[in-house]
Length: 106
Image (cartoon, rainbow, N blue to C red):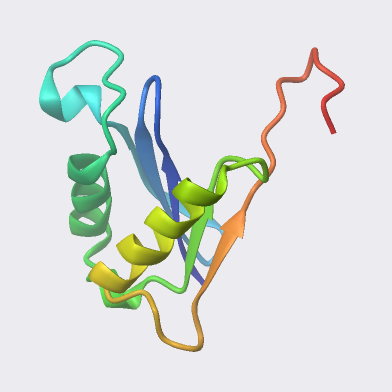
């Protein structure tokens, strides 16, 4: 399975995992040269795909960092997946719960 993980907000980043192996992981600030870049990681996503030799339509799963994303962000990601050609029936958006180990948030 080809998974693209996307973290937006403070220290935005992207990661590409193929068949359980990390192929690429990069923070947006490495490409924009803006410390703690909080923009949506478009360049990091493109670089992960380039490193992995994949096109956006090859991605089978888009993993996002929270199950508590407001509805407006969810709609944005639905729009984004359509723009990235990720919207066919075999692909899904997964919200992956991330919780710092010192917090009991789940």
